[in-house]
Length: 111
Image 1 (cartoon, helix red, strand yellow):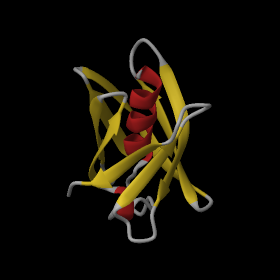
Image 2 (cartoon, helix red, strand yellow):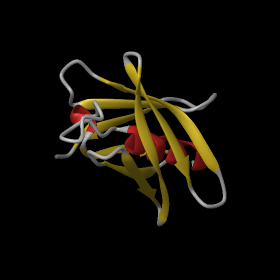
Image 3 (cartoon, helix red, strand yellow):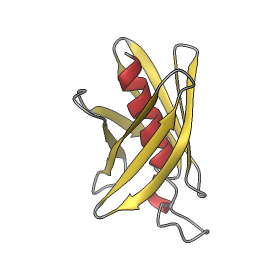
């Protein structure tokens, strides 16, 4: 469960962040939600490249940056760190986070 939480946080941290600051993250900016290991994960990505991920009372913070056709995220949960890739769907309504050997975490846009 933790690795998916980290992936989600990284996802939204990376996520995600492409608007007025010229960071190229505009489409990722906002709130995303998905399910991982019987928990709901919420990821928030801001225009300055910050990402926050939370699930089951735990929270992670980090950053997101454009990388080729995807985005790279880096999360710090205090007791562990995680990094991975975020991929935005063509319709910009689904975000997929991949971190290491873990199953992908699929998030849906909330706003």
